[in-house]
Length: 263
Image (tube, rainbow, N blue to C red; front, top):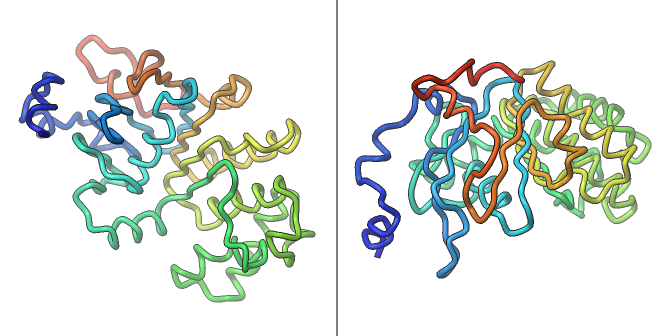
């Protein structure tokens, strides 16, 4: 069945062996990613790369494949074809345990509705990546409160998720994604449930992570005002890249510039 699908796509069996140098050097990269759900092809050969310190906005209408692509790049889903690289490691060749460990240590994830652990306080949620990677409790507590303060919710630090507003919980989720200084930040509509002023606070934190700690940031959004914070945009439609530059393209013969400098 896979061979029939590949033949229909016109994909050579040797295509995966020819990994672009950009994908090998990028902090985050996907090459020729395909993914279906049932008979519906959601992604159809998408490639991209994000450099250290670069913010890339991934745009497209609902159903274009943006969230599926983010999940593939985080190793939360496996591609049917193609490969995803995080910090030099090919995710789809790793065991689930190794993928989870790589995400924990090197990746920060932000989803539209936060996905905090409801039984914990905001501070305990933010501390979690630090505690799981061996940071002493006192240091983890101080760093968590520092990030909650940056995002304007330190006064709610000791409240349970059910005791704060959705916007406050979302800011805590952003703090959790940033607190351990990840090399990669994947944010799926991080401002979708926030008002304009609070959304700008979140975007300032994500931009600051790219600037101050050299994180590669992939920002999934359908809002032009959010995409304006990025240095580069990629447009998806019907599972394909239809606009912008993926950074892999910059190494094609005759390409201009370098994919490793934020625009």
